[in-house]
View 1 (spheres, helix red, strand yellow):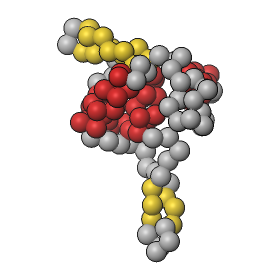
View 2 (cartoon, helix red, strand yellow; view 1 turned 135 degrees about the vertical axis):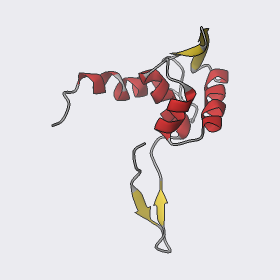
View 3 (cartoon, one colour; view 1 turned 90 degrees about the horizontal axis):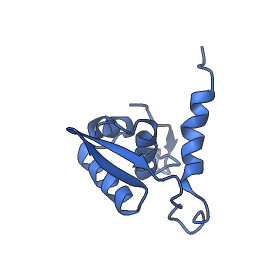
Length: 112
């Protein structure tokens, strides 16, 4: 699991924050690996397995994911045409975000 950058709070305490929500991180993790176990997704995102299950349920209910049972495992299909939920971005599809963090990163050469 990667460490987050911290920002000094008003009283000198450190605060962690990110630009993407846990829902966004889970969606990206599944888009990168549609056959990942939720335990692995949870570890990658930095949440509990129970939280990852709840997030996947939210994403399924919202139409962003579809779960298919394959043997003893789940396989996920991401719906890139789903729209962002916040009114400020509701005219944009999540596929653009997914492409930014999945397809483009696969095209970049590894840094040495």
